[in-house]
View (cartoon, rainbow, N blue to C red):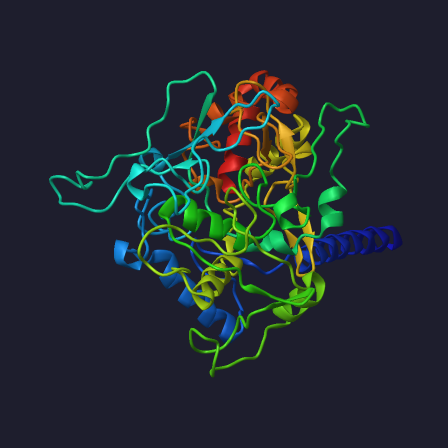
Length: 450
């Protein structure tokens, strides 16, 4: 009897310990997930209002009279970020190209010169960045591009580098700004000191005070604002001013909350997460992600600059800051087995399952580092310190709705994407090829659950 009671006590203790560990793990997770396109749950009313204003700007279809063009890839942010909801990705017909010149010193600047007032604005050989806009002013249904617009040609020259890009989803993107530099650096191993063949490193951005890049396929932007200002100008010809206003040697950021576009009135209370964020990050200077790190960007159309107001830019950034991370699918025994396979073949060396933030753990399956992905995925384009073969570890959350895959959208399936991996990921790719069918199937079920 006494032995039976002892066994029962041990069993109850084990169950209680398991429940405690499970509960503790759940409590450590940040409550930031939701349906695709939804805001992070529990936002303060001011942050939620800013999210809705920013979503409207994200979905707005700009016109030439509002500064669009003369060349552009889409009339709205949503034009390239709509699948499966606002803030998502796009199919290949929305892909865009970047064009750079291969210099003898190894640098890859944009191919065409910057626009100046001395240049003929109709020459159309002056672009704000390496992005090549495909479209011009809207014409008619029969002739959607106005006949008098000559598009920037892609030269057939030995010094020209052309790369393709598929639009990445931005769900949960704002949470990366909460990941500390120390958290990112803790996984960096630029010299492969541990000899595991993985040598991820950070990309520091000179135009943003050498801050660590977190955004873009090559971690080429350190802030969401900088990335947005670049995309606005590069993809649509929309100019903007930084929300950081220089005052002497310091910078003051404009009011982000409030009821109206100018931040006046309304519920100005900030959420605890916002206050904590402001305390942790302070104020950072944001620059346009264009050819030169100048704060004010001007173009040569007849619409006064900036074409997007500072409050509008603030709202646009707020929308992306507060987009929920994708909600995880059902975790079945097959999914758990697949997760074990994922770790066993070495994928977690780059696709780190969790990152720590002040709000708790998030699970994007990225290390926010750049890695050499080998010649097969290399595009030859250098951005800040990222080489032509280095790419950021792409986050895997929301993968089930993300196709096509990889930075250039070349892969139709997850399997195609894995098989294209090379460089630092070659060993994991080879282990994937050698998997037994049951293990590979479980791995796919795990990836689909993300």
